[in-house]
Length: 552
Image (cartoon, rainbow, N blue to C red; front, side, top):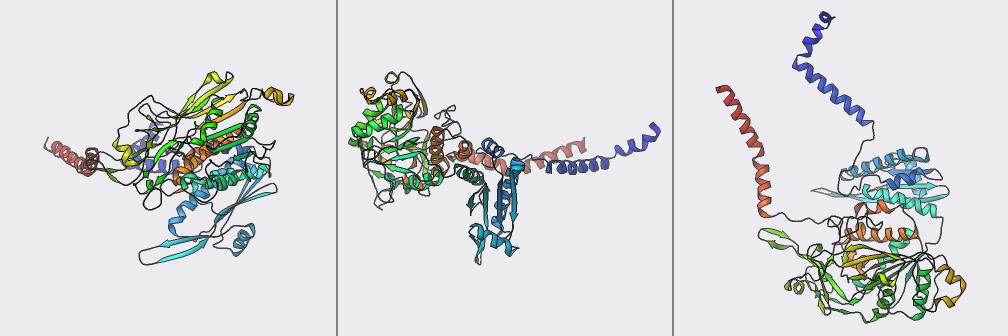
């Protein structure tokens, strides 16, 4: 036997045999791994990775889901890579759902019948622009999908960005499953609240969030003035953004709602100020913020007194955070040889890395970071509500300062006065859950039914800033933060209070307010020199060893 295998043993000693086997092994492994779903998103945000909530929803569909995907093949080259990524994600989603999902691809670039079908289903062609050094061209292309679940249909005319596609599909499925049910959400109207109308200062309005985002997510949203209107019986969440006056009638309705097991979200405004800019726009965008003095909001006194009964006090101050705040304004030389932007201390960015966001709370455990502009601090008063559990979900760092009125919020004025720690960390967001006692001593006289319902668990979520979803954040400099961090946080909070958890994880995939910190001049120079001399140094070392071996 040994004599028979001798030729093979001799061949195996040849370097060509090892090389050939290495090539064959490489081809074999590529063939194996190409058939195995082994994709992984190793980025910090994980935005290309399918979430566990999506897997759960797709596996528990009551009816088959049909996905008709229309992607034109004749599109400019810069769009093709993203289109292919989106198609791959759709295939991955189809594999997860197995027999519950039917995926069909259409190419309107090659078949007129596919163009007709896309138009009949309600898809709109997208305008793609291709530019080169000598010319520019515009082309129409289909890049959308149509979802059908039972007798319901959702049309996504623009399903192009892979990082948004999973959320678009999951949100569309939820809309179809809701079957025109009432949203259960009420927005409170009062003179001191941030405006729902598309007028006035962007700082003091929430038209984008109230009229576009909420309606797009949950359908029609009621906007009520509780002074003259009552909460519908199906109300699940009451949202109050601002700090207007409260009448006894309004207080009684909110109180009854809370002690009967309702959920109340308050983004409070206890400090009032106006921003001034020579150009008539908001100065933060150009680095020339000239803000007036922040003073106590006189219309917030009833709100503060009312909420204090439930164990949360909102203070009349502004928290300045030197370490965890958002860089903005003009690019300047912040250190010798280093260009960057100074952080604006009143715009605080709590995050998981600094542990200023609670890693265990359902409201923030999937949230990488959050932007809290011009926030007042909060205090917890547990003795006010014995059967209520309080949780701090967002806070400042220990080096933060709380400044009371009058406070100048201009960038130059703030930077001219050093921030001095005076009691931090300060609470920025608090969640309370439990059996609340009524604000009104005579509540028991209102009837046996209300007294019976008062044993239910109520929920209150409070932030010391109404500007989390202000239209100001829709400006290009902050729009990514609004879209990927603040809006997902508030939508997740509403879902949690409504008892819905399907979209929590997928919404928070992009919640990081990623700040690019400039490298010090010495480190930047060292890295450049390392990359410049690495290859020559390796070649010189190799040549030196060869010469030494030859001479030896």
